[in-house]
Image 1: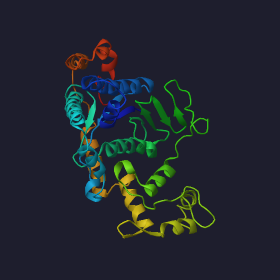
Image 2: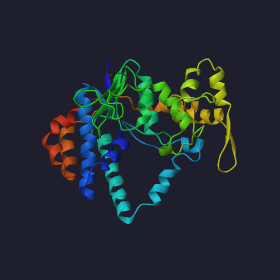
Image 3: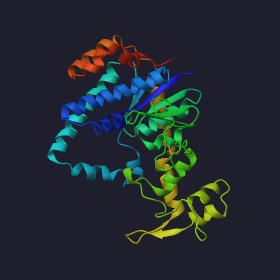
Image 4: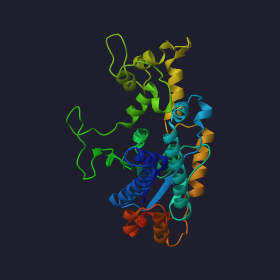
Length: 328
């Protein structure tokens, strides 16, 4: 059994940008530092064998559902000139980082124009059922993949999520701020169901049933009751799914129709057949050993260019996960 570190590359890199204060150069250098540090920590803590960097394409979801992530462009258009300058610097640095891990390391690097990193990460987990996968990301969407063979490491909060619960970098349970008790392990099936019902504001995926309650009332079924009835498709399930509601444009929606749409968008095992084939082919084409030599030296040169002395001082430790070839 092999252990793979699967890096949600853009997520890790750009999230790091928002936790660092300082000028553009300081933020840019720390984004790389936090990304590489997250990889090194996941590699060490989980005794990994190989690192896989997953990159973003345009996404097939934008063709399937026109509003998908349309809010991201609105946010970009609202940036100030200084924020636009910072954005440009970060994207240029990110492109250089992508080239570095692709050309100067033995890590697997996967990208396809139609796929998001989420698709590739999920596809890798699903195609390696007998291996252990550690996802490096802050994205809550990966909760649906958590299980005995899949763990998530958040390099920004230094938190690990397993099928047994949430843990700090010291291995102690994360304490829920509301209950003051250890934070319960994610329940992947329910979390995915809830997301498909409530939608996802960060990705501009609209709710299938606006205002739906988690717990039902005497006269109205809630998510808990509908989920418990999901397999049998009994009264509570149909009571919720056959409800109709009208949006602000006067258009009528049936809950089941919008729920099924959101399942395709949000469930990382429910992509259309042609997309599943692209995912599987992309993984098959890239899951093979590379033969890059002197990775440590190449890392030191990259560090020198971006003035990352702390990483350069421990180049051997940081290079170890980058030089490990895909196991055959």
